[in-house]
Figure 1 (cartoon, rainbow, N blue to C red):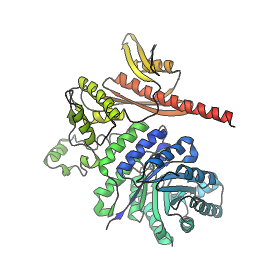
Figure 2 (cartoon, rainbow, N blue to C red):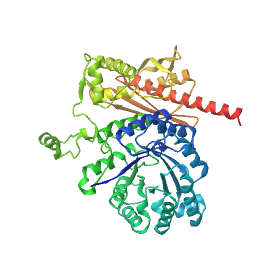
Figure 3 (tube, rainbow, N blue to C red):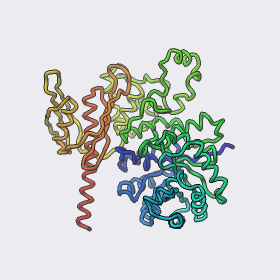
Figure 4 (cartoon, helix red, strand yellow):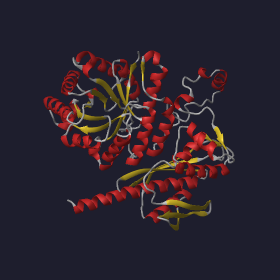
Length: 516
């Protein structure tokens, strides 16, 4: 029987540490629900000691999800472990993930501790975490740059202390596959009690080798892989969940292992994470990129028409992409609309369905054809998010070669409609200046991305923005056949998140003033 690899998803913890990818607790819960549908074994919900938001998100996920194990990260400190344990109280299956750096460079410059101190603290942290749960994972941070003999000693000691999983991080993406595979093989050979724990790996992509290193580790005895959706994470990111899972599936004959992932949920999961983080997936990204199943070369097209496997080693249906793009038109009713959403993996509530259907009918009046990607974009507009302070009611712009670009905007707030106008360098800039005036914020536009969701002159446009204000960075997204409207929607979406974050900060400050 094939060996089963545990998929440990850290999108909500390490993935969220990617600059500009901060998620609210509500957004984390929405992604966690989809990760459960995807079939991941472990969901690392966050780093509870880091913020109240992280602690809240872990607790919300732990309260609702009953399938996957819910993990929380902690440094090898009592306060961290206590915070992780408190957030995990509602979980049916819980894991505390403790870590401590072991490499010479980290010992000397970051921790200023000798090997003996590192060894004692690692053992203590595992024993302390065992007071709360039997499932404890230990990570010797920067393991790939740690002396092998000392690394083996630490691993043996933490397993003896009760660690059920030992995770070997390539924290800065320094390792290469042959070397990293040999390190895992060395652990299997030289740690005498290794059979009492699972070997995990957590690889970063600084040299573009996170997936190859993870696969080399699996080949040499690792039984768990820590990864993220779309490969997001600090610096150059983490090992990509979809790339690892599909490699193990397509090359099952070589690796001889399986996973519990429902690969038909991959594309939907990728889109959800991209939407809520504001991180656009590059077109040539393996598995989930826009061009992953497109063929332009005449030779390739001829081969595909004759037999798809000549140039496709993965069928689009395997990752949840429909074989047919053409779906619905303006004469379609609610039943056909809801049936198609179900086929795409969406099951909205009645209220969400009515809102999405109204948006669909509006779009169908503007377009000759409505495609699957249009429907996905429509539904994603109504995913749970932070409370809507402002809602875009109306946008009108004037611009031209000899005209000062001007935007007139109407926003609603708590049932009241406000209107203002401003000039800018272009129609989009004029919209953003107007919204800034109306909201009272003056945010920095860190990033603006425009892409066509579907093809044709009447294609649905998708705008993603990232704003920064007083140290807070948020993402916003909007879609419309009118790119000015989509731009305004995206900006208003981001402003709502900034307002929500500002309100939370003010509340915390007031609480601290009252209860110092």
